[in-house]
Image (cartoon, rainbow, N blue to C red; front, side):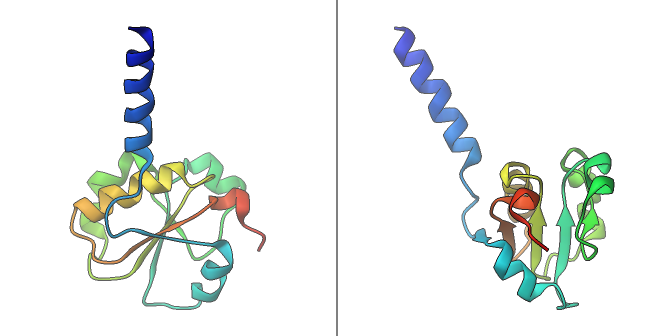
Length: 117
């Protein structure tokens, strides 16, 4: 009986971390090539302290916990790139954006931990 409960928990966690349908993952190398494109909106969903410690200047800090109320300030038609520390929170943010009707959402795989810029 315990193994069924454990299996359910693991299944739920895997399901929560799966990218939303239509969200692509990009590498930090791909990101470097995109940073000069002013038509893209870049969102860093880490906490303000994490962002203050180290960030990519093109990114706007909108922490994951306040992303939903900030959706109206973003352009749904623009390509949107999200990043966090490891890629987990940005994956959740990408789901939120996609479910809110954002057309083109990209998640940076590995997040700031993988960034060498």
